[in-house]
Every structure is written in C-alpha cells, then in structure tokens.
Length: 177
Image (cartoon, rainbow, N blue to C red; front, side, top):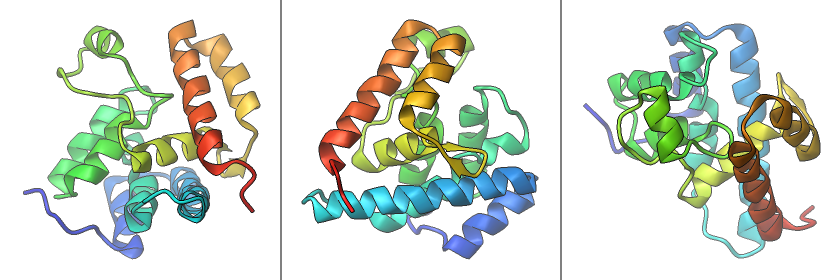
C-alpha cells in the first residue's frame, strides 16, 4: 500500500540497507541527498517553491534499485521496491525519473518498461536528477565532466537532455551561495 507520509531520513537509510544496497551506494545516496538539499535551499532563496523534505528523502532513495542491478533498469527496479515499501508517489516518481536527464518514451519502450513518463517533471524530481549527475561515488564533480562521460556512453539525445537539465537548474540557482 502506498503511503502519503514521507519516511524520515533514518527510515530511508534503513530501507536502503534492508533492500541490500552496498555501503558505497548508501554513501552515494547520502552525498546526492546533501547536495540536492543545498540546491533546493538555493532554489527557495531565489524564489522557487520546493518541498525540501521530499527532495532529501527522494535523493536518499533514488538508487534503491541498485540493491538488485546497476544497469539503467535500477530506476524501474527501485520504483517497484519503493512501491512494495509503501513509499509515497512523489518519491516513486523521483526514483523512476532520475536516470540521466530522463528516459524518453521511445527509449523506455526499447527497454521494455511500462508506458509511463520517465523524464523529470517536477522541480523536486529535476533537483534530485541534477544532483545525481554532480556526484560520482560520493565525490562532487562538475557537470561538464558528467556530460563528457555520458557523451561517450549514451546516444546524443540522452546527452542533450542532461545538458538541458543542467541549463535549467543553473538558470534557477545561478551563483547561489
């Protein structure tokens, strides 16, 4: 049963460990959550309405599917795990939409995923997806590095979605301190 209540940070970390995520995945999720919260706070400072708690919990749980696979399918696997844990729909949306700059309908069909939206829609989803692109392991990296890496691994439309996401986020946060 899907809940309306967000789990606490401690509950989210427990879910990661309980599902079988490695210490490295948990550290990555914590680093993404910390950065996502900073980005969300900056967005708020600049006048955007953001649910800080949703950003933090969604970021903590975004890679829960890595308990079973490290392929692109970890997003779908994570959404299934999250649904079985009773996570709220907004958290499930963050989990399934955080990969790259999102997965197009055509790409999702090729992957055999159910018909759905896999591109970040809400500001909270975009913040988590963007923060995830700025953390390798548990270290922060420049977006240019991620885009360069992706340009060797992903088709041009996927790289372009990451670039557009980065541009949108930078337009929102600018030179926030």
